[in-house]
Image 1 (cartoon, one colour):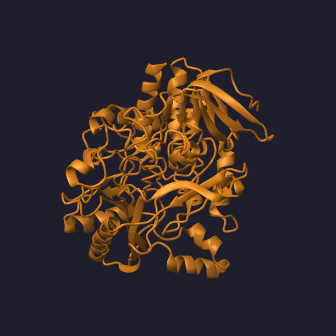
Image 2 (spheres, one colour):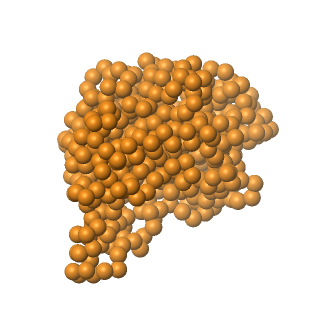
Image 3 (tube, one colour):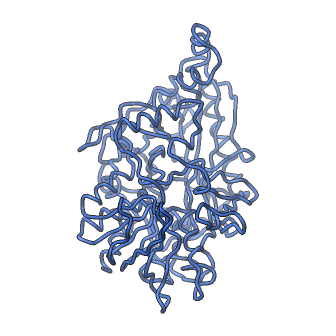
Amino acid sequence: MNRQPSERVDVCIVGAGPAGGLMAHRLASRGHDVVVLEAGPRFDADRDDRERRMERSIRPAHGPNSVWGMGGDRDAYASTGERHYPLNAARVKGVGGSTLHWQGMVMRLHERDFRLESAAGVGSDWPIGYGDLQSYYADAEDELGVAGASDNPFAPPREQPHPQPAFEPSYSDSLFADACEDLGISTHSVPNARLSAGREDRSACVGYGTCQPVCPSGAKYDATIHVERAEDAGARVLDRAPVQRLVHGDAGDRVTAAVYATPDGDEHRQEAREFVLAAGGVENPRLLLLSESEQYPDGLANSSGLVGRFFHDHLFAGVGGTLDEPTRQNHVGFNTTESHQFYDQPADGSRGAIKLEFLNYAGPSPVEMALGGEDWGDAMLDRIRDDYGTHVAVGALVEQQPRAENRVRLHPERTDDHGNPVPDVVWSLSDYERRAIERANEIQRSILGELGADVEWTVGPENTGPAYHHMGTTRMGDDPESSVVDAELRTHDLGNLTVASSSVFPTGGAMNPTLTIAALALKAADHVDDRL
């Protein structure tokens, strides 16, 4: 690939994940010259390559990070907070970003999520409301090909049905439905960014069940779809071109170039009229902090001192066990039923939002049991017959309250393959999250108790972990002293720098963030288009 810079273009986008891909496609299709700089490689998108990666993912000899080439000095990081944050466990650097291995659940934030401080006295209000994103949510669902039944009584208002029919509930969902009905818990379908019916050149889901970390059929959305559409519209996408820093002009109010490296060891400057950071909630603040200058000694766009601050995620809570009847676990690789009944936080702000998930993939699959055991032949078959197909579990995503002490900063000593300080993720939990996790566990145990399950494990406050949804590190707001970007996602300090990512979320609720990332990216693309 020719990785020389283009002549000054209209838009330079850093990152080829969902936000970068959607913005590149929208802006290129409107006639703008667009260059996308991606730190990682371009993976082969053909089905044979995806099937090889799927096979690698289920073989015990291969670690999970090897499926998409993560690890080494390029992806080095630190985590010096109260709790270790395993950053590389669920991210991908490359064209497509982390949508290459995500599960693909896509929900809209609730109306209350945008005014949490006003409603419950915690967190911060967004400078925009649900109504400002409603049409963009619909556009995002169409672009991603979302399957759903629009049957959630707790969801915010919709303007039209989901573009694809919902997936049928799994067998274990029917078991949960009966128990929840007896307990007075409402259940409903899960909107998924995977095709239930074929569309254009994408296959309908064929049930590989390996959604994380790879979908061989192409039914699950990933950002390579919009990157390729952007290229068809004239955009130029450079892989293995990690941006080292952004450079501003003498006045300090506009970015003039993105300095990027190439595999041959050279550095180049890509000039543009508008710049977009779309590299995620960790790499976005890291790049801004790496772009320090005389005028911005604490990092670019950081006059508030909040770049990297207020890092937050979602926490996992779960209870699982076994039943004395078949559950047909792992016949589906994604959730088809959940409940938002316990989502809205109490008015006193005593605990966070809870999104219940009914896990039809609890317990090992037959392939995992066969490849992971030491038995062979009849002994292996007997073990699978005895141990497979009776597992059941209820999970949950739990809201984390953004706090300034949780942050992404530059590590003072450790460096990456280009000699730049690696990101240091400082992460801890508060009583706000602990109370919500405990509440989730109570609900989960009541459901499994109603089923008559033998509870064998619990993920509670002491052993919880992140959902790897990196949010809040370049937060959105009207006040330049308490935020990094404005309601249009443009930085307060530099008039031609946009940040499109979950890093702009002032709060995160308990919903998977990708649909909101996509909606905000489409909205931001319209604002950039207007300025151009």
